Amino acid sequence: MFSLFKRKRVKPVEEIAKKVEISFNDSVAKEILVKIKDEFGLDYERQEHITFRKLERFALKHDIYNFNKLSTMIEDSELFKKELINMLTVGETYFIES
Image (cartoon, rainbow, N blue to C red; front, side):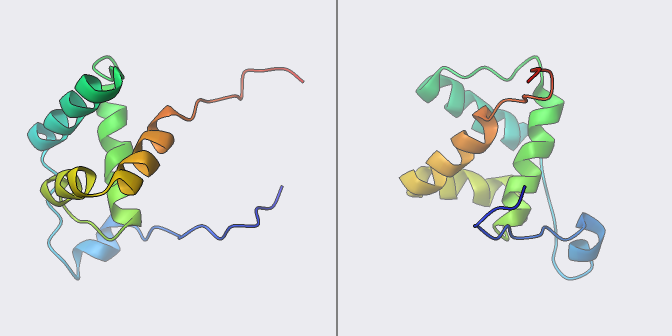
């Protein structure tokens, strides 16, 4: 199925790392998840590691190379925050039979 919207292809982390300093700190990611839990009631503690990787991919897609900047963007932009929450809450449907 093709989409009308073009997706921005995320370059491999290794390729980006050659050009900029990438610093994804898990303690900052935990702070982001605490803020999400407090504001939206979404608890990702049980799948924390997977969620950290999702946050990394989301950040890289937006040319953000550390969780401190991601946290700032979330606080400064409701639209950006909404996009992040939508990305985190889209469920897997591979198990649903048609």
